[in-house]
Amino acid sequence: MRHGQTDWNVARRIQGSTDTELNARGHWQAQRLAERLAAESFSHVICSDARRAQQTLAPLAARNELSVALEPRLRERRYGIFEGQVLEELTAGPNAGPVARLRRRDPDFAPDGGETLHQVTTRAVAALAPALVSGASVLVVTHGAVLDCLYRHFTGLSLRAPRPVEMLNAALNEVHWHGRAFSVARWADDGHLLDEAAA
Image (cartoon, rainbow, N blue to C red; front, top):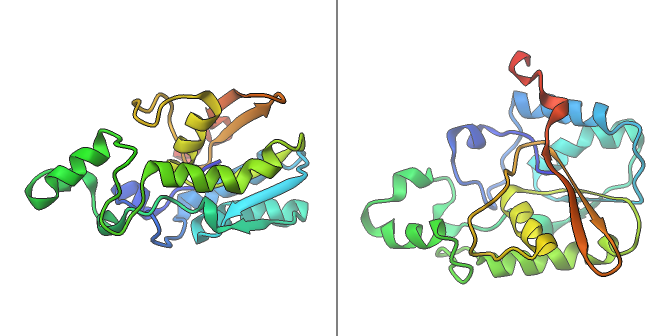
């Protein structure tokens, strides 16, 4: 699952490696996740070491006394000079060319100080591979761009292809390993957040 909502999500600011925190709605989402998953058991719990990811997992970890492995390789993509910026505001001026490459999903493009989609995929898959193919039940908390890269790894979709699914805050994504291949059982399941407007 992706971490809960932050103020930068609301403002559409690029977070990347910036260590932001959940906002009030994000903490509410984390509580609802804990309620939904309260009866589940997991052999492995792996979480990005970013604060927003740890805060998302915290209510469930406390409720179920989970042992959590913090994994730096599950951090959000590094966006370098774009971090803290609103992408839609960067389409003119000296950043127009780099932003265009980012928007068209050039897998070999890294913003100045950032990393490519290939690099994100490689580190995320390496972080999860031992647990994912073990046949055990694994809970993972990470970030939008990382989930996008993992979805493509699971389904064989090109890194260049338009994004076919949403990466919703605090939604559940379920993937099964069949010995030779993965299958996506559900994606962007936010049924536990349906009354979010009342939060």
